[in-house]
Length: 563
Image (tube, rainbow, N blue to C red):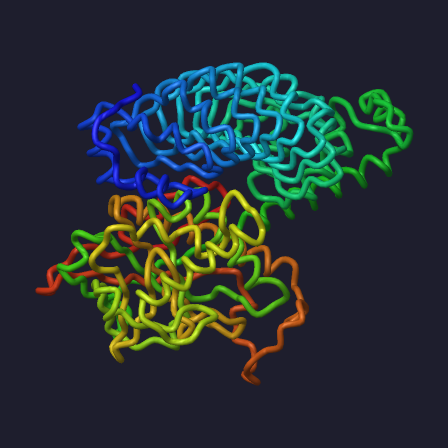
């Protein structure tokens, strides 16, 4: 519905300042939508906009067809609402590169979406869509598509078209997909493929012909080939692709050196007993290798077992700002070898962008435990009272930091003519209208975290970090904090196993170690230890302890939780 009435202050400001970017999100905006019966009609007159985000508004259930008037839009973010339909006029947004319709109530997409010729990123995850429109191959610049957590029974055939030569990421987990097309090899740029938790029975051997494929996930599918099923639950991508390339267990199709299908069943009858014995030996070694790959352990350490258990006290001031927090201590994560630290930071950023909705639902912060002093206080301060040393910057007030970031964002727009800003500048809107800002303070009075903006340089992770203090905060719910922390711990375990298996040399990425300490025995085992942290209110009453018995209950088959 297109609604008139008093012009919203945010829209009025954007028009007055000729803004190219507008973010409308959260409770205050949702109340306006509820009161007015939809988004104000004036929004569609902001023709200079190239970035528009309307998110976290459960009262928003439709977008007016006049969205087509915003012809300069390059990014349209409409996530975490209750939108049930998308107008056909969306196909007239010829400049759109990024379209995010995730976490809504969509049952279908209009075919006109296929007319978005500049589209590079499409995210429609967490809806109830049962079929994708045919014709996505017309979006020849598409590089990433996320259709996870829908009701898809199949992917459209033309999603594997050779016209999509830039498509590098397909995320289609948690659907009901029964078959992956053997035309998948037509995607020369494919790097990431996630079809976990579907209804696949087979994986086409042609997948091995995707030369750039680096990351696959087929966990949670009941494959006919049980050895392959075991491998996808435990082995690295290369091992799985090598297995497919070799034609599996000798059943089905493989490829000879000329690339033609070979009948391994007929060939097997002609091999000598010696070769058969060698095959059986190799088979046993492969199975043992898979079993070893499956051993990924996270051990929970209880507060009662630690005489110096850390505690976080929550101030009542955070109630109206960002009330939810869970914390824990992680031991055994080896960040010293090779690119281990870099891989972890990249994984954390990916969780922020995907699971945490670009920090709108939750924010992760990780610290070097040895550089902070307990106990900690989670509170709120005014922008002029909150002082910290932001990552990569000198000490300053929060008010000055935000002014500086806003100035940098404006300069980015002018100099690079970008549709969106990068880095910390993306999160400035999350604090709009707040009188106080959330912060985590250690016993020395140092602000070590300023969610959702930045951490402190004082407690920054380094390759020499041995123990991590981890926090997840949210303005939405405590359960979201726990869910994000669960996923982060599991990712840490996976990365630690990867580091352990690759046996990288320390400092192979060129970063010098800042200490001459000998390596701790973390490199001798990939096991992670997670020590509980208790969060209490101002009177000392327990609010939450993580991980509890109900946390870290992952069904990841190759992960063992020891309590």
